[in-house]
Length: 83
Image (cartoon, rainbow, N blue to C red; front, side, top):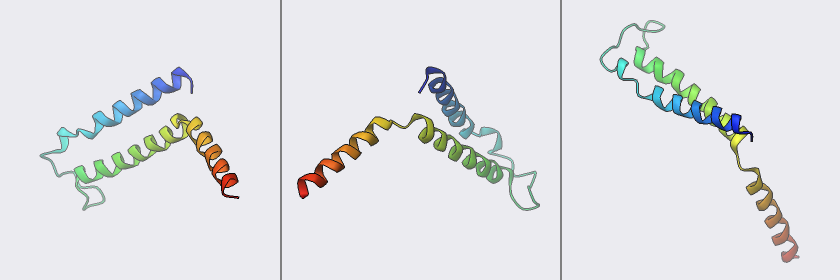
């Protein structure tokens, strides 16, 4: 992973964290989206999708691949020892 990717993912995580603090929606329930969904609930629905995209990005680009390789090697060794 490049340092630019690491910086971008870090900044994205900070932005998503800051967006979770939605103090501007605490006292409002209007406008209603689709005629029945309060603004706070709609905000959190969109926020949940954004957080899911962030988590997918972190797994895709920042997952420590060397740990998966190490686990695969250990699995092969234990299978060979069991034989």
